[in-house]
Figure 1: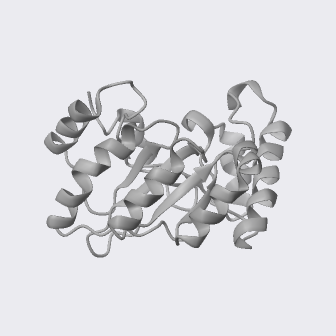
Figure 2: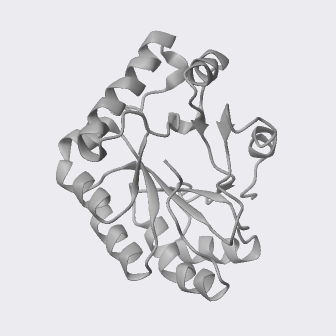
Figure 3: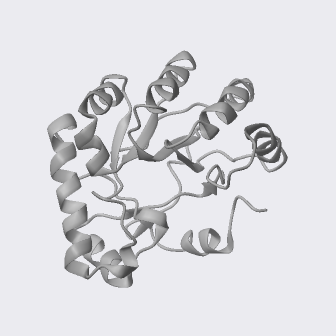
Length: 210
């Protein structure tokens, strides 16, 4: 099992203007990112954990879920975290036309603007799937696709203790953008163990620049 797949190593060769995989490399920052929320079952406990450790994060929200749970989106913003765009319905993007893909992006941007006032948000395609046409559309609009450099694999159904042990054996590096998910308690339980350890090693946890 590798937290840095061949695909991710390849994407790191793309210029940041097209695909961003890492955060600013100054200092010793880890960039926590959470996909697929907000969730009334899991988001509140995750936000409380981040607050206790003075950690900020970027939440790549599904527009439909943000619309269903606006109180959670407001809390994310009020706690000082950043909002990201993870499409409106989290479809399989390869099954959509380019127009349908762009509509998913725009609809969610417009929704999130009502919470943080920003017209555009970092966009992470569902399941990391995108077409060259979509990447070019973003580049033409002076935007990029927001990827990650470290996949925690928290979606594989492993026990959190096992996953935490694997992360210790292959630890993240400064500047890593860490892919996690806000649709189960797995990442929260892993972070309960690892956030204190990472802090002891001098890491800080800012949100990705907007």
